[in-house]
Image 1 (cartoon, rainbow, N blue to C red):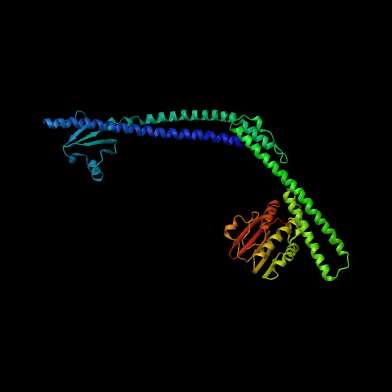
Image 2: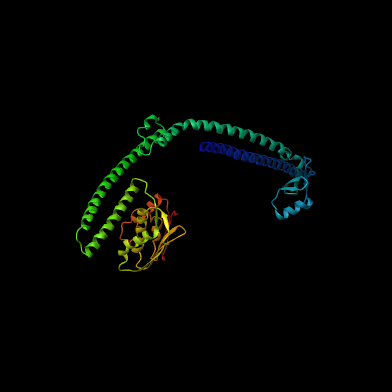
Amino acid sequence: MKARQLRTRIIAYFVGISLFISILFGFVCFLFAYTIEDHLFNVILKDEANYISQQLSLGNPPVPRLEFIEYLEDKQQLPQFIQNTLQESPNAIEFSLQGDLHYHLMWLDKGLLLAEVSEQLVVRKVKLGMFNFMLVALGIVLIVAVILAYLSLAMAKKLLKPLDKLVDIVAQAPVEKLPQNFSQQFVKDEIGGFARTLEQALDRIRKFIDREQAFTRDASHELRTPIAVTQGALTLLKQESLNKKQLELVNRAVAAQAQMTQSVEILLALAREETIKQTEVKLLPIVESCVLQQASKIANKDISVEVNVPSNATISVGEIAINLILSNLIGNAFSHVEKGTVTVSFANNILSIIDTGQGIPKELLDRIFESGIKSESSTGLGMGLSIVFRLCQRLDIGLSLDSSQQGTAFHLTCMTH
């Protein structure tokens, strides 16, 4: 379909250019013909003016040699419409009147010459024939243009055949195995140079992917091993005789351990492009849990937290993923508000986290979801919002942001049942 559209566009370009040039050429031809005709009348009048001046100097009657030229002693002898035109345009030398009358005027030292050239206007008489000839010529040009367009398409197809072959090589290669050693089959022309450059680029990409896969594999092992060890230690510790304070601390460590395990699983899934499990979960308990997890950030601040989430609200995201998203957004709000309100609300399938802080600086708004981007007042690494953005993309969650000096609002458009 695209190739057919491209062919149509090429033909249209050829025809359009030919049509434009033909019309322009026809216009120039008519303009040239009228210019030559006017110049001819001026030459004739100039020649007659010299003749009349000689006759006057010899004392002979000033009688023009051509019947359509008339000698007048004074401009008052001119037709009235010419006198009226001269009042408005004193330098006019050409005059037309309804009824196909056309005049040329030339001033002499004594008197003037007036030529009524209506019968001598050759272009006017043949312009219909000229126009018909132009139409026939235009038709021939357009036919030639279409033929040339098809010939150009055939030539372009032949010239671009190696490029089509290169496209097929890249398109048919599996994602997990980028093509190698394919540039040798192309001749050393522009397309061959492009093939070699592309091969080198794909080779660098393949090595980069290999390094990233090795890093992810090693990081997965190195992260999960200590998590498993600390999980076992905490399990054993809970079996000991602990007082109330110790048990509270162990339970907090167990909760943090579970959260860290979930976060690692999500981040590794993002790195390896694995499918993140999405299940229907109740939203309110997750929101309340995230608020409690981040509560330490507002311990010494004058902040009120409002949760406006219906108890029966559910979303099809998955507990681990939505927990990580909300922990980052709520924690971010808590960190950037010194005094005010943080509101978490859910209505019309939109989950909103709104704070009354000082807002995000304007120079950062367009890049706020990039990794490492943060304001000067932030104490974090600038990774949280980047993780949120990537998770929302993976889970098809709509993410939007409104920020001003009155505060910041993040809106998540979630799928519900």
